Length: 96
Image (cartoon, rainbow, N blue to C red; front, side, top):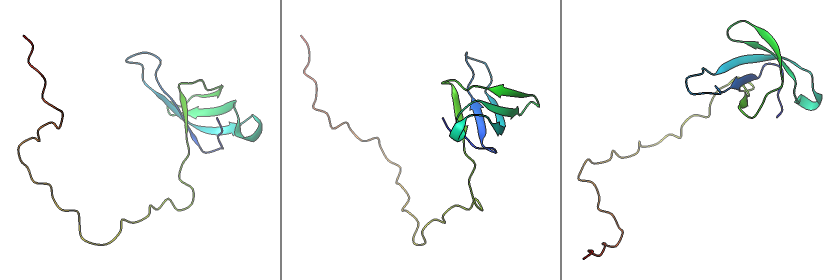
């Protein structure tokens, strides 16, 4: 796991119903972006974190953040609504 100052740390909840924790990495104490990290969480508290397998580093877009525009041209044709297609699987044999 590697991170830089300004990246976001997203820690998923451990149990059903537990909220995720998210925060901004404000210091990197390991070599080459490795943990531990000092994180300022969205709820306001700051702490030293050694992320576990339930954590993900979210890297913000670098530069101006602009996405590549969609190619120009005709829009894709609309799909026609109709009956559901039949399965292409072979019919099953009836059991006796």
